[in-house]
Image (cartoon, rainbow, N blue to C red; front, side, top):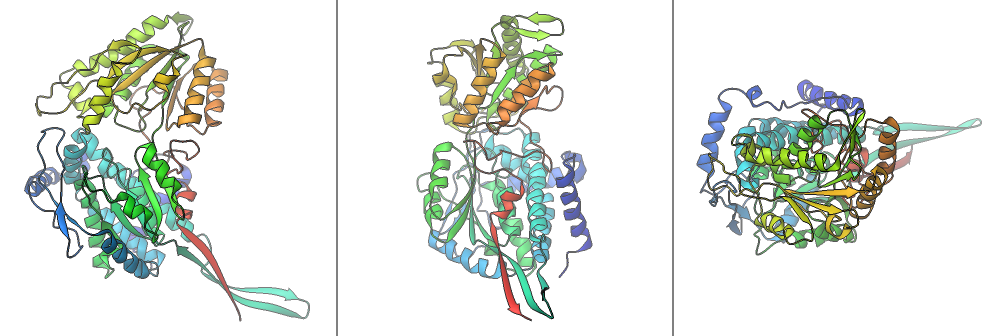
Length: 551
């Protein structure tokens, strides 16, 4: 069946946006766009779910029920359990469902998947509460990142797959003139999916980082197993449940998309990853496990790992505006973002602003004071920093104090009037010399900022480039009012496949990547081997096979 007109319009607009790369959002990021009653209903649904089994998944006969999520805001266990299954059961069901799903037409797949996103849209507020109380993001960030922004990214992958699957005709009559006669063949071209796809989620962005791979695999005809982080299951469980509902509504086996939960003490990630029937793996998380995933034989992998993100400050039009922007960027969600800046390279000679040079010490003090100002603000501080998801992050911050470096701003808990028990941690800022590569050459995930005094901008660029080439980088912020210098920075960083955000001020930060426009991770350096969403992100999930027969 052809796509319904309404859903066809959604996909067509998404494809147009992908080509134009201009601003587009199918799902508005403002909460008021979803009606006045939605927040109240979602709050009630969230409260009703706490302390009870999650019964929405259409996965039958679980072996047990598992759950260990704890709110970073209250310190309380959510008390939610999820159906758990033996790995073999999950894989067998995925294989059976794949046998059906691969033969569903592209239009019918697209119809089901857009329907799933429309169902998810109705639960953005519940998703926001579940994200907030599993990840530690603020409520508004949870709403936007796990709701509309994630759904836009899912739609982007879906639309990219839809376009690629329709790139070639399904069948043609091929005729080659041979003098008085000709050769006539009937040719068929079929996009054959790879098989079972595994999506390994992370604890800080359980939906935003997962749905692109999920929807890219589903639109291309692969069945999907979603293995969430055991500390952040609730948000993605809602998404999987709505995908299953959309599948069942069209008479398709809901096991096309399954949730595979585990516990911190009995992880099943490696069992799933190494299963020979699993052909595709999407992974977000630390580099060590990401390297393991990439090393698995017989798998096509799409990874986003750790990166060392740099800021290069050469010259500025308005230092105050730059400092305001950067201080917010490092404070947002307490630096628990793969795109957060970490290493600030500042020349010892200072930073030029117009015709004057602002001394290095003044630039350094301005940044430290601005970061402290956000953390100390009674309203802005808690709302910007949120809460810390993993106790290991706080341990990492504490360990920084033992480094051979000057502490310019120490970390401390941030009072949260709404959630007095919240696990909070303001940014720690340390200063090192350019020679201290052993300190700043690795990702220090969390609210950790390093100011690195360099000889000049050329050395700043050299060091940032080396970090990206050796350890990976997902973002690089740069500031220069000299066009030749700006182009030099761009050229050097793109040689190691690191994108540059130049002269950002105001209400746009280096942390943000926009759906339908920005490529998230380039796939060209150690920060990850894939980029969503480009054609390769979907094309590697299927194979074009051509059949010929005499007419």
